[in-house]
Each structure stands twice: as C-alpha cells, then as structure tokens.
Image (cartoon, rainbow, N blue to C red):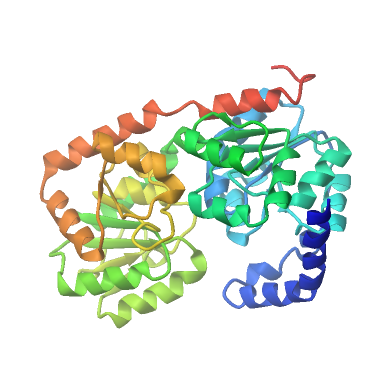
Length: 424
C-alpha cells in the first residue's frame, strides 16, 4: 500500500509534464493531440451492451490480438469488443484491420481518478492485457470493481524484469492483483513468478495464430508484378539507426539489380528515412507514389514502404526478409509473420522480444543470423543467388509457424473461465 502511495505521488508530480509530453510527441505525430479526454478517462461513447475489453498498447500488440478478437466475437456474439491502445499507431492499425467490428479508445494514464472513470464508463465484464503492461492503479481499480483482469501472451525479457525488480513491492502487488497470467514461454513465466505473480500458465505465443490474410497476399502479388523480375530484399519494421547502417553498407556493396524495400516500424519516420536514403545517394521511390498497373522507374534503388497495414503484402512481394529491430539493441520485431508467408528470414543478434521464436527458427533452418549490416547484405546476396536454399528456408518457415499454433484457443479457454455464464 505504501509503495502505491509513493507511486501515485510521483504520478501527481509528473502531471504538469503530461501535456508537454503529448505536445512534443505531436510534433512528429499530430495524432497525439486527438482524443485528449480519453487519456484521462473521459469518453464520448458507450458500448451499449456487455463488453469484453482487450488492451493492445501499440501496433505489434494490436496485430497479435487479431486472432483473439475474432475468436471472442465468435464465442461471445452478445458482447462487443472494446480495444484500447496507448499510441496513435496502435489505434490506426486497429482502424485499418478491424474497422467498425470493435469499439476503440485510448486507455487512460494510470491515475486513480482516470482508471476509475474508465471502468465506470465502460463496465467491462473482463479485461485482457496483451503482452506485458503492468499498471498498478488499473489493477487495483479492477479488483475494487470486481472486473477480472488477465495478462495474456505475456513476455518479459531479462532487461524488463530487472527494471520491474527495482520496485519490488509495487510490482508484486500489481501482479498479485491479476486474475490470471498466461505467459508465452517457460522463461517468461519464471520471470513473472520471481517478480511476484502467484501463478503463470504457459500457453504459447498467439502471434503464431495470425494467418496471412488472402487479400494481403494478393496485394503482394500485385506489388511484385509492379516491381518486375528484380530480386527483392525486404528490411521489415526497421528501427531508428538501422536504416543508416544499411544504407552505408549498401553504398559500399551495391546489390546489382536487386531492389531494397525498407519499411520503417513507425510511420512518423517515413520522411526521415527517405531523407537518409537520398542523402546516401540512392534513387528512392515511395510505395505511395506507385501508380496502379505501372512498373517501377528504372533508376529506383530503394522502395520506401510508407504505408500502414500492408506488412504481409511486403512479405509476399519479397524474396528475402530481414527483420528490423534486431540489428541494433531493440530486441527484434516479429519474425513469425515472414515465416508464415514462407520467406527466408535474416535476423540480427538482438532478439530478446522474440527469444524463443528466434532460437527455434534458427535451429530448424527457417532463419539465419547476422551481426552487422555488411553481413546482412552478404547473406542476402547469397540467398538471392540460390533458388533452392530460398525455397528450402521458406518451406521450413511455413512448417515452423504452423507447428506452434494454438495459443489463441488456449487463451480463449482462460478468458472463458472468468465468463462462466457465457459458455459457448
């Protein structure tokens, strides 16, 4: 209790800086100034019927939640799904992928008055937090109102565990206030238990259950026809600093007639990455500039993927996929999607966000690991010249992704235990 008192005191002292933080973020992403009231628990709409609430902080968590959203809608047709986010990109992703199939809002900041308003307003029957978002006041408010709050698809790296361990009493209290915890791996479960969780079931990673949408695969085929016969290396979900390394290596070792497709993780960096590529001396074309039915201009050396919600299409259009966030110490982005599409995967050494999946993909031969941008281009060049190796890795990747599916159904069963009156 004392730990949460000091936590709330710190939040109170930080309150004057919240507006400044949003204002600064809005300089690169104006959407941060939209729906400001929701950040403090004020909403202009209601669910109108019983709600199942899922929280997906940003893009990755939103995409991971898709199979669970579909399963919940089918299992509990009398309930609406409320999907909450913390970032504009997460919210936009849900708009593009789910449209009006769900309600969406920002989860308020973890001020006691704000989270109580949120719960009073929407009155969810159950709450499911995707991956690892531990908010002490939100957990406490859910307990006070009798709302079962579940942590699903939970992952916790050693780095994150050390950060939470700095506040042992606060973290323990929050974890013990959860109704249930479903971890991705045994290692994740062990770290959560060490921090104070009373129980952590290992249910697997729901990201394996995200199947490539047929319309995205068709879009990828169209994009590939536009590109033509040139080999395609995709740098998917790249993070700040990685593109500069890649462009520097590319300038030293031009890839012949291969096309490099770069899709930054965050849309607010599209302009920055385009400028970096131009400064490095490359002819840059944007995805948004491609005319329907027209081929790429001959001098194009880099295609900037400046679109949202098309990652499966980019995978479908490429020959080899590098997974961003792994060249520098960001812990890697999702390699499972590339495997599910059947593409050879190259991944750097920073994989703590997908440690088990990366380890398993490397072991079975669906992925190869590189250490530097130069090694990345060398490995990509070798694969682009070896049709048999690419086919073998792609087929292995599909088998790898299929073999680990099923976490969504297990998570659905866990949620169902807290909605006993709504049996299928």
